Image (cartoon, rainbow, N blue to C red; front, side, top):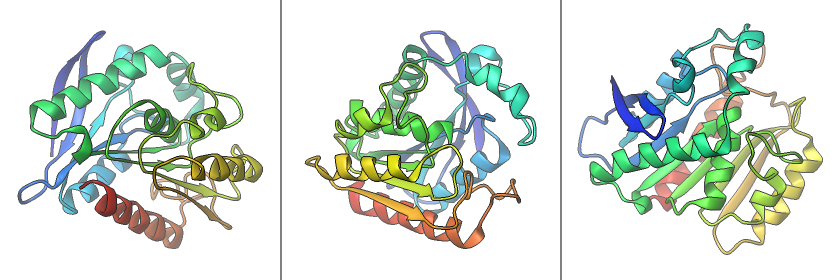
Length: 235
């Protein structure tokens, strides 16, 4: 596990990198939550690496110095998150994909997974890029877009890579009706898609550093589905 710096259009960006023990099967970009590249996101990278992929988590807050916030400090995190925009996010994705290409991982062997804020970024990436597979964990902005992205409902109608969406019915920020519309729109695309809803899932159900919302049974199932998705589509 290491921290590296890669060049972007707006200066250097820190990237947390987790390497598998053997020859990599491919690579997975892990997109942070609103709180930065937290220890939880780093552990996600390590788990992905244990399954055989190089995992990279770019610090999308690098323009603000790359801060990481405590999970009970959303008031500090929101102003930094609000500085993100589509052009900057796309530039950062371009930079991290270029880093992976330089390491020998083409689009077909590169996946992307994101959580919360990162889940929204992943849906955008699934509609605009040609990566091998994409997984969204409780990404909002379905009815109204975030960061200058089109609304998630519009993006779902343009998905062009195999995409899996994982949502909780108790998520206060993502209405179930919106999730079901995404399911229908995604299912009409000419690529494999799936939407999984957890009846008792809250926003952040995968984050073991947030005991008020973490659900270990749901998290275990969701992670298993994520790895099965990558196994199936990162050929």
